[in-house]
View 1 (cartoon, rainbow, N blue to C red):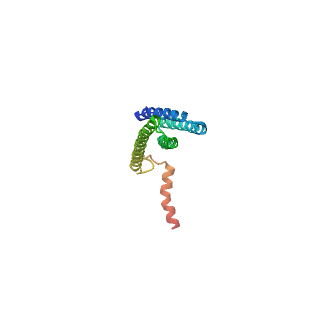
View 2: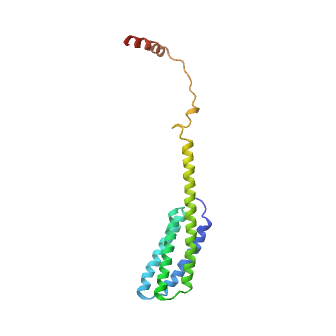
Length: 167
């Protein structure tokens, strides 16, 4: 397994600010809104932790999951700010860091697609190079002619005579 990239650490930093800011927003809510958004917060924490685990293990789908979660979180924050009529520092922090995180996720998705495409080209080139025969080392086999046994020589010499008789 390779070392995590700088974008992995940057995304951890970004998600820290996003989640802490969302916690501040959720705890400013009252009654039913608080309970509903607390459940949403816990779901986001679970999905983002799972996605970061996938990114750490070099899963392309982890970046996709992070991007989708950041878009939904951004939309949820905008929805809360429209309902409350307030757009405070926590809202600005979530909006800023979500956009930056989305940008990093898209860059990583693009780089992984290019890496997989390059690997496919290398595999195709390898397949074309070795498609000459099923056995790649067949040319290197040296055939040695062994002298025939006496019985085999008799069969070889008798064979044309038998064919002449039946024809």
